[in-house]
Length: 85
Image (cartoon, rainbow, N blue to C red; front, side, top):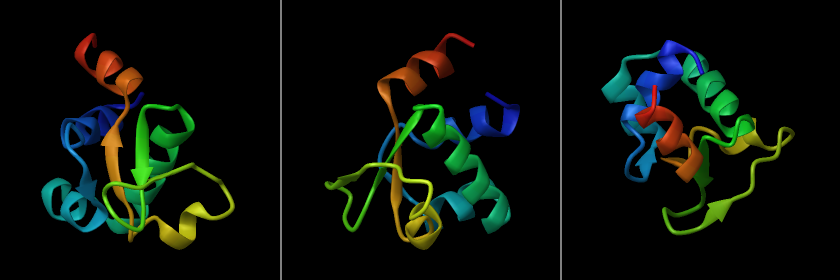
């Protein structure tokens, strides 16, 4: 996990929409999308779409289409990794 990814996990203790993450982190949208993709691939976060209660399985081919409309939450593994660093 990179330092920016670690910082992003700070914001994901609760389900958080992409737009809110953009505002809170100040990271450009394309870079934020890449960080989220990396965290999803590592199993450290989960994505939710079309609403904050519906978990969406990560698929590399469709992620780009919904990434900016989805919400995100740290997974149990993500929280453990974040808190033990």
